[in-house]
Image (cartoon, rainbow, N blue to C red; front, side):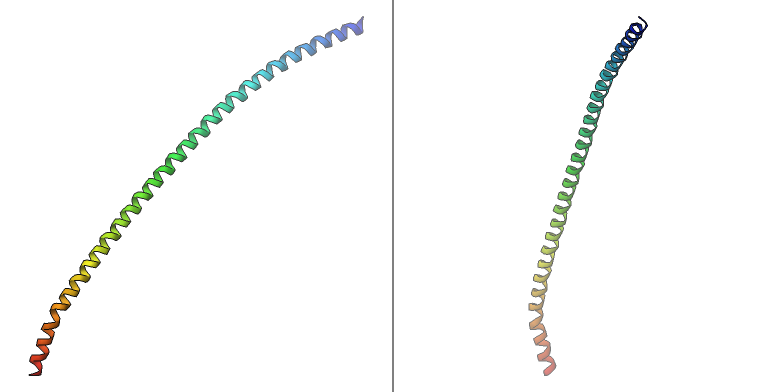
Length: 106
């Protein structure tokens, strides 16, 4: 009878432990679900921020490239204009230089 009482007591204790373990398992499953949800939200926010920043940098770079290209084009046009003016001045100065040489020769 004493052994039966001990077996019964151990059985009751085991049932209590099983109930507590079941409760702990349910809590762990819920905490895991909440943590996974929070982690997913965090990673989505980080991804969104990175993509947004990359997009801004890409736009900034594109704008800067356009500005540099526009400056290069402006400088090329100014250089071409200056060369044409120099050639025109050179053409105008050739007869004057020739006349000056003729005058000095006489």
